[in-house]
Length: 340
Image 1 (cartoon, rainbow, N blue to C red):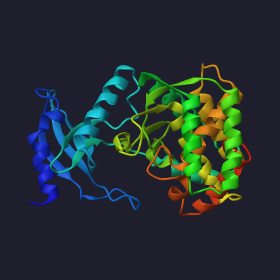
Image 2: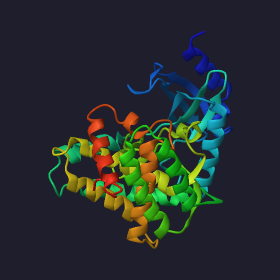
Image 3: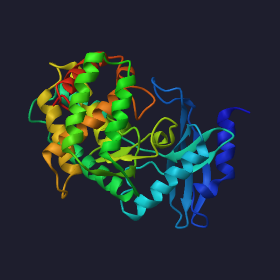
Image 4: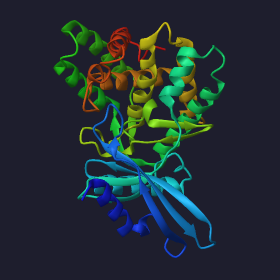
């Protein structure tokens, strides 16, 4: 029996997970070819179209995806918990809805998200758009910041971690790193010592997406959806982390487009960064020095690969990525958390 046939049978056997019993009636199911998710991924996925009728007699279609992941049940349970909490808070619209899983086939069934990747939209604006024409994109970035802030607030734990402890671990990782010369390590340690001496705080630990990046955000009009939630259960990524882990990761990803400078507009990227942060900290007290210090610490953590399966020099290896890594390395050595 082919994988596609097995998936079809599995969905039909668990139809109560996809349709509302006594209110929706199954008519048919079409599954597209199972293929690689994208050119960067070895994961298989396929689009499923479920035809059904309602108790009022209307015929509709429900579209969802089957995706091969590691530990399907664990991922399904985790995403279901997140979905339920955010549904109560009215924040679940951008999330792919979990329907069901199959451990034997190694797949999960999750909701469909339509749109163009924010990476493509941002690249088009940064490279081709005339200055001053980025208004619609600015609004998306601000909305993203607002939503991510509420997401973190809704999924915060009762645990905290001191900035001292974070920097101590960072100092240790810096000593062991093979990505930097000894002179560079000593230079970075001086900056970290300064932050440690001037900033005293504890940071709340929250549930994170773990791959909140431009390619995993799909935009349709003024709405956006977020995909690839299986990074939540990635063995090399945190279950809980300070929100700054996710904020800094997203901003690194945005600023990586500066590898195309001078074709890429520094002004536009700076504007999008500012709007995202405005959205995130809307209604919250925010100290500029504190923001810069925390962005610096967590950007350096990402550079060394402390919160991931790879360091930034390994992630940004193609499409002029090494150029961005050199730019970011220079910024960090000069004491800045980023390029704009």
